[in-house]
Length: 435
Image (cartoon, rainbow, N blue to C red; front, side):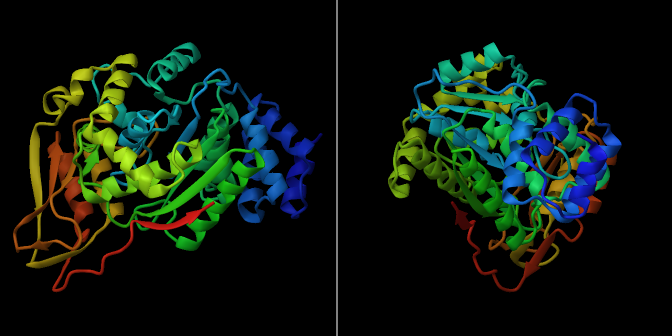
């Protein structure tokens, strides 16, 4: 086969065969097709898309570009969850521990922060000693022992995605729905799942800011799951305001522990419960969503979920005392600053995008892949939209290490908070469900 001819076909909106797609992905992964030709192909897909059969074949070729997990010896139902990314989105950490406590096996492979949204791996690695780089034997051991493993993508799992993602980032083709969907689903299908729940964020703080486009992405991923006989459900959830009260790494772990102990902010708990009920339904544990929520709540009240998280931490080299003493075990930067309300009234908007960018400026995230994360910096939200504030009352508390970074963050936050005379109308956290 010939890469130029395949590129020309997609350029001219001619559907590619399964064999052409398989050859192209394999040749790119092994280096026979160079970056410049794959960049042309990515742009052709960005402009002309992939039809359903093409997308299924593209995802399959990515999936089989390296090793896949064989979890056939695990008797528990195997279900995972993926989020498209948001600000303060630490849902995966309490959610997976709660669902695993109810007998569901969760082989979660997560990513790192890039841009204004956080990364689950960076949050977990703020726990002293915790490692997310697990070889296959260690991965399986933790999953078998705890019912949950929280790890990063190995070098041998879907290597085509790692190469193509970096190329898309450098060629202006990140926002392609077929390329986003195949990237996410190829990694999740490699986990040998029975079911998958997707949290597709939509709003100013999400990568998908338009509801129609977010719904299209959700439908595309659900269709891919169906093509591979993996039961898949997507929830579209709001991301105009940061989720929860903490944005950062160590502080989000502390908030996750609070949720597992029965507390936590109402918005974070609500999204966690909604996704957890869907996971239990896909696993065949409880089909009624309200009953599923009650079961999840019980794992918080009886301590089972927190116990699961502590076991995972210990199994992956971390300090399990963090679940009892987060304030003393987790790192924290030494300095504090506050952003106050400029007038009295009600918080009407707290822009998730700018809060996320400000946290990144403090060092909680990465602008480039090679940037170093500071786990002890972050932003605490003292007042959310709908709450009354007085002029001069603190709305945000910034934890920082370097004064120059604080100045950058404060500049970003100018205009992030809007105060109005009347409280805004309450908006739903779960906007829609796609199955």
